[in-house]
Every structure is written in C-alpha cells, then in structure tokens.
Image 1 (cartoon, rainbow, N blue to C red):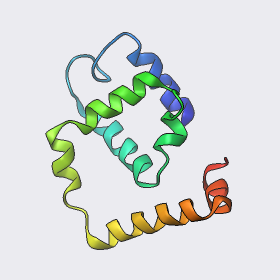
Image 2 (image 1 turned 45 degrees about the vertical axis):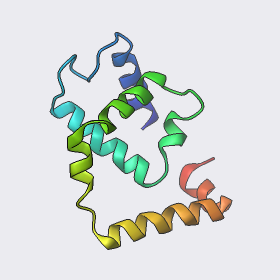
Image 3 (image 1 turned 135 degrees about the vertical axis):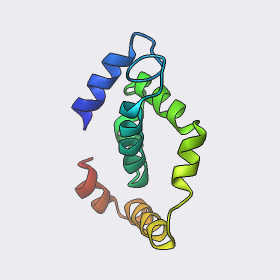
Image 4 (image 1 turned 90 degrees about the horizontal axis):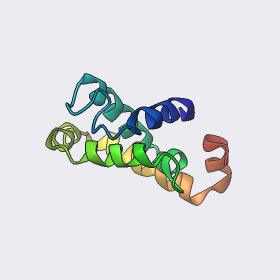
Length: 104
C-alpha cells in the first residue's frame, strides 16, 4: 500500500485536485474506496500520519468533503458499524494486536 500511495503522492505534486487533473473521475472513486477501507481499520495514520504523503492527505480530505461520499457511507448496517468499532477498540486496547496487524 505504501508504494501505491507514494506513486499517488508523486502524481499529486503538480497541484492537480484529482488523479486525472481538475475533474473528479472513476479513478477518484476507486481511491475513495481504498481510503475508506484504510480508515475503517484505523490505518490512515499508519500511511498518512506524521507528515507522510502530505499531498495524499490533502487529497483524501478533498474526497471526504464531496457530498457523494457522505451519501455512500450513510448506508452502513448495524453489524458493519459494530464490527468496525470493535476492531478499533481491540487495536487501541492491545498494543500486541496492533503490532501484529500493522507491523509497528
């Protein structure tokens, strides 16, 4: 994942708003899904924290601001929400589990 995000960081260095330039495209939708999965398992900080990949961090913020993002995420079921909450809590309460999952 880090290598892919490094490539994206390089692409975004020219100041573009989205992966293909100024226009939101299906490529950005694909990245939205990837970032959301990283967010769900509490790995955003692992890949974007501490100033890593600052262009990607700004891009992720831009994607989250889109109205379509909020609409797409409003359809999560109760089991999905509980599973994500339980995973985050398990990682917070067990440094050993976090290490096994994240390698840090």
